[in-house]
Image (cartoon, rainbow over all chains, first blue to last red; front, top):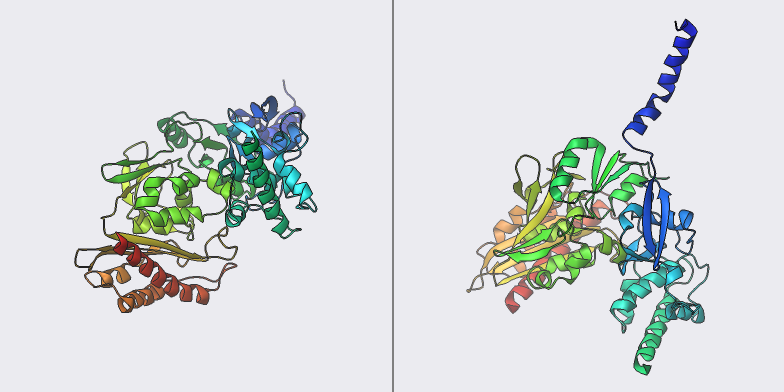
Length: 191
Length: 291
């Protein structure tokens, strides 16, 4: 026989935890394994299905070059390349990014070299102050220069319009992209 | 604020997506480009248990000509709209609007149909689609239906889409030869920002230079993107000129009912409706004459 007090405990625990159990039943809160191909390397992580790509890159894969800013797609600090196209990794679910080529700031320099031509130009032209917007800026610049190696100033400004910088006033950033485009063209003609 | 957890469903066909959407009802949301949905999820303004991602469905990002119409598939990205030569040739106002929608990154992610289904009164791409007489093809589990875009919006963020329905494609008839169109926009953060006011116009001429078809659509100045039927009517059969265009622009101004918000004041919006309508009509006429 179950005593009255035991009945009370069953009743009590049922009501306290019923919400939790019902959520478990429909499969929410369970983590899933995602496989991501970042900068040519395969990574696996068990993550919540609601986790965004930038959260997984930073928290699970320790690739903290990509920054989190506004989380609403306005500032561009989280810009990465997905199959060669620039996207906001704060508005992309990690689970959606499987089976796609992900390129982050950590992966753009050629192996054996420390910096990509665009990164070098940013350093040399003084296009960096606090540095928070820089990875996103560089990725947007790369997306532009991959398609168009001789952009005009207007095209550069349009290409960077999704990246906000609160320090430099953009002039040096635009200059850095111009210098990078010249260097890229030089290295092409030399070959 | 972190996003509340959900189960991600990955249908392989639109049919499968429909049955998932029907099964989970209001507990599920459709994810296309994600640029609006993820923000709503993060701000907890929606809290679905299931997200149905259309990302893995093959071949629904088409933009193709068929039977004198252009068909735009549900996953066609804004960046694809900007670059597509058929759209640049036949629907320049749409290409223009798409090219000034948000930023490079958002255009690489967001879809044209998603932009319209979110039914923002200021959606950049709604007004050009309205002047081109776009039709919306809607899928559901019972019977597919087609609806004209001017009957699609019912309020801010609201459309005629019912629970469990998915938009399959837009069909836009190719305009006649002597047709010109134009898109005009004012906003604060130049191109990037949501439009403070946007206006699209379309003018078709006959061989004698009379107007046979006119369309004027306004964005961000009413609860939904609207067409100004009254102004369109007075243009029909007329020889285009500054006087008749000014009259149409005045009617457009009167027909608009803007609100004041962080982007613009109501008065400014009203004034801009007149200016932009006149500009859009003039530009449409110029490009119609060139053909």
